[in-house]
Image (cartoon, rainbow, N blue to C red; front, side):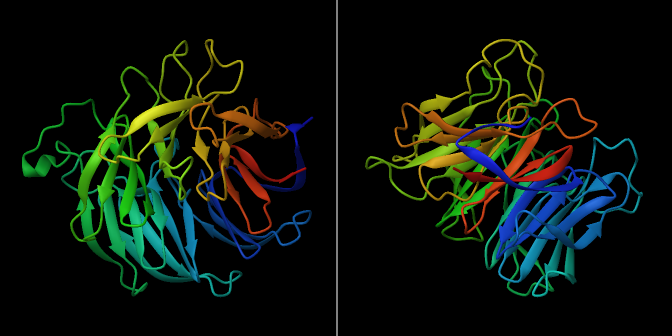
Length: 372
């Protein structure tokens, strides 16, 4: 049975495992983890009775597990899936696809932007630009790429930024192992990009001149911590007169007896000197744990000081950051284990205009949750 504290299940949609979910105007857009499932568009206006409006497939060996929506535009990623035993077609090129969703039941492909290598992983989107984690020929690992979508039929790259050492074709040499230092995804707030960089922590980039991103600062705690940095989420309001960022590490790379991933609270009042001032881990995760047990991803829509987060095997956790030095859990919901699976694997969470929370499991299913 599902377990909860101050939360109830408002609905459930049985679908292939989800990587990311966005909800706009009662319509959910779900990016799936594995082919042939690519992107599902689901009517959730009645949360007790979700229904599919459209589905976009993906070929073997690839996936389209991330999705963003801005107005009538939907952008999805396309990427080689290294966890798929099937191999992609030799002519597959990763990138993004841009769709017109003015009629969600009939998404219309407007354009496809291709990149070299594995493709595009995660990204941010606004009414004009897309901020990508993308591979590119001549570089090792993902770098940050900004696309102009003013004409959605013709995306144009306007700039890119990478850590020195990634541009091997330009004579740079990485001093890290393989692709350990790579862009996971940027998040824009104002003229800044808060950019997680896997086992290189995070970087704050100045994009006042969007054609020339400049690094302001960053912070890397790996080592001593093993888990890579997944998300750098700026808080869009001051707390006690100071500015903060929530940073989530992902519980995927570490020794089984290592420290499971958790959330950090980082003071960025002086953005040239970010300072960790607090952290959060749920109780009972201080001993050896299997991978994919702890933290993965916070809700990227911030509506107040209570931050919902997908916590892999421990479902949905809601963390109050009102006191940045003493984060505390105020609610949680752990769904039933999906049929045919060994445990829950909560992957992403978002919120809609009604305050309903949408939690995807990377194995199977979408659970709609409400606070009580």
